[in-house]
Amino acid sequence: MVKLSDKLVQQTQAEAEDEAPARKAATKRSTTRKEPAKRPSASKPAKKATAGSGDGTSGGAGGKTGGSGRTGGSGGTGGSGRRKATASTAGKGAKGGQGGSAKSGRGGKGEEGQARWHEAKRAVREDVVAELAPRVGRAGLEPEDLEDEVTATVDRILQAKELRISVAERRAFVADVISDVLGYGALDELLADPDVTEVMCNDFDEIWVERDGIVERTDVAFSDRDQYRNVIQRIVSAVGRRVDESSPMVDARLPDGSRVNVIVPPLAVHGPCLTIRRFAEEPYTVTDLINFGSMSDDLAVVLEACVRGKLNVLVSGGTASGKTTLLNVLSRFIPEHERIITVEDAAELQLQQPHVVTLEARPANAEGRGEVPIRELVRNTLRMRPDRIVVGECRGGEALDMLQAMNTGHEGSLTTLHANTPRDALSRLEMLVLMAGVELPERAIREMIAAAVDVIVQVTRLPDGSRKVVSVQEIQGMEDRTIVLQELFAYEPDIDAQGRYRGNATPTGLRPKFLDKLKTHGVDIPAAVLRPETPRKRATTGRKR
Image (cartoon, rainbow, N blue to C red):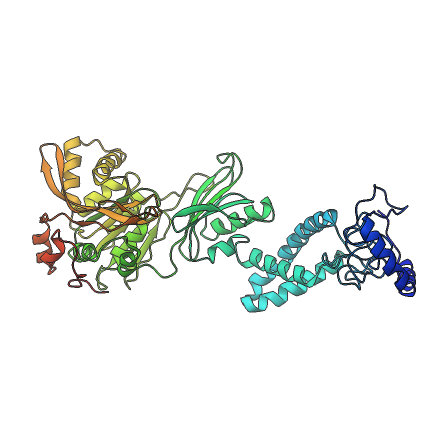
């Protein structure tokens, strides 16, 4: 590539100003012919000029578009030669000038220049983060003061490396570095979007999100795989976890309570996978679920009565159906004077009562020691004088300890379970009890379940992305070797022309057996909310918003 010296540029500019009238006529004729001008110094065949020949007014001084270079030449944009520019970064013309293209801001850099800047930016970022991160931790800088610190550090390192960038690029780069130091890189933009409920990173440049129940791919990406891995390590280390080849799977959480799952090679064949389940900054209330169409007003009255009346409630549903959200909503009905103990794999429940103790399971360390599973935590809660026990999810042998707690005076307990129907939930609960390693006959297990669990609430994620309570069933006891269920609320799908599911679960008209138990705790359900009538005014009795 041929570069013009500053002296030659100035000489060419002076000649162009002296011969402007003649050149204007030549430009008009050459534009009509549309013949490209050739320069002896070009290393490739000439291409068509986009706005004039090599002798046009845009060459040399770069006052208008057109001329001899594609992007700069001796000035101007468009022309027959390859990209040429002097060391100047702005030029004098409207689009091109002495120093080449003003668009690039770095002396007419082309695609090769952009690639070099990308590589340089990676190196600069590493240097800035390495220099700045320890200082930020010691100084305890506020976010508003951090930008000045990062800007000064970036300028110093860029000057040391003799790199020149535009003001806009520097501003974007500073924001990038701040995100690296204090945030989660490319994820910050997605985590700030209130409509995003799930973030799924399959690779550093392949990020998917769920909005309004619909999964879609984004154009957001990390700069490279190293930045992606650094963000993963920062997330898991913040909660005392680690992820590497010896421990390739981990569950963690973000400071806002969002659930995080990470799996890395060799288990993840194509690279690390990061999944973040987000929750609302302000926990949803029962009013929110009613407004979302997840349940009816009458059903909310019944569920509140079940919690206040100390019934043991099992929330059942598939993946991403809203089990944890519903469990959070139900927990808000627990009176504030009661002592609540929660047990979870990764703490994500957002209870609002003042007297709450949160317990979290711990995985084994690098030596394979120190593991504390949920089952041991559930057993420990029995010695902590709980009024309520809330288990985030039953996944294994802890189901046996949970049932024993429910059957030994710890009423009003809440938990969730993965299952597609209430009947499937019973079968899976029975299987989880067997996973405890205790040899119990089938009938004994079923009798324990029938005595412990009072109500099963089934939630489902429908094809349109909405989440609804589709069934509420009461366990009425045993009949021969079968647990008897009675459905109190059922949902009949009603699909409109746009494919959206309308309506809510409605009463079946059957009288639940637990009404007498509720009365012993001073809780009464209005008979109107259990009648299968449609439509009527929204009930408010028995529920506090």
